[in-house]
Amino acid sequence: MEKISTEILVVGGGVVGLAIANELARSGHETILVEKNKYFAEEVSARNSGVVHAGFYYPKNSLKSILCNQGNKMLYQYCTERGIPIKKTGKLVLGNSKEDRIKLNQYVENAAYYGGDPLEIINQKDLKEIEPNVKSEFAMLSPETGIVDVHAFCNSLANEW
Image (cartoon, rainbow, N blue to C red; front, side, top):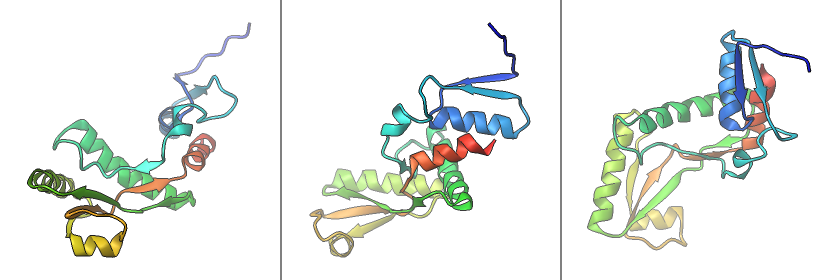
């Protein structure tokens, strides 16, 4: 059996493995990625919805909130520069109670804290203009939430280095 040596071995060719291998290879590290399947992104990455999250759900100063907000901006930039299908569709989070209003206000504060696009609380009338089939007292609009073509993104990561 032939032996192969490398500086870094990445196991798994999904979104995360490809992104890690891509970054390491681009920064000059000898990197090999191994994948058990015939093609990249055939497991969990193939089954995710391709949602680009805005990160407002996570508590302030949590690693998830920091990385989600940074990653959101980086993903839009990466895909736009390479012609990968990605779209800011926006997201509505509905509310009907005082407790809902408190939670949505917390999300608005979280987004402002990290410098994301401002989240907006909208009333029932404005909500009907955006989405006439939804019945809710109010909603929060997240303009940074979107969708990405996961397979095109993975193919780009796999073929860039």
